[in-house]
Length: 138
Ligand SMILES: [Zn+2]
Image (cartoon, rainbow, N blue to C red; front, side, top):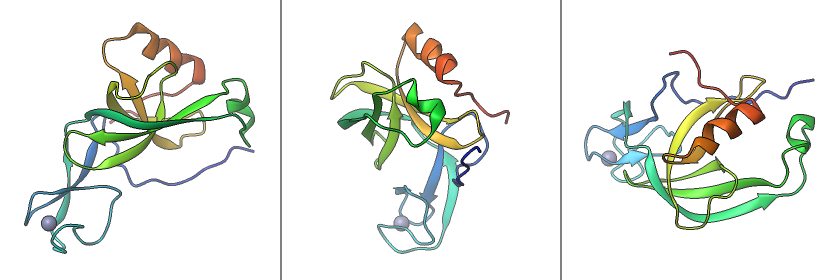
């Protein structure tokens, strides 16, 4: 049985996060009030999706059968150039402090998630195809 979970990422090809209309801070994860100034003027905007891998970890066990064939599975915290730190699935072989770009992709069950990819690598698209992650139609 597929496992489903909900995220609140807007359905677009670009990374969109909440931006505060009062102070301009990019907020992630999404929230009711700005984490900087407590204003409730938060709207979704396309942001710079590039950042730096600041820590990473490998998962060596999965509760979901489709992932068992792809272990170990990389997970990273990425310091985005636009401010926040986000957790993301990590393209294999990506080292610490590497520059990456975050994309919102869906897995085979339609779960939307953040994926960190190294820029300009052919292996990124090959990996995404292997694990059956894809972009939603906007
Ligand atoms: Zn604010």
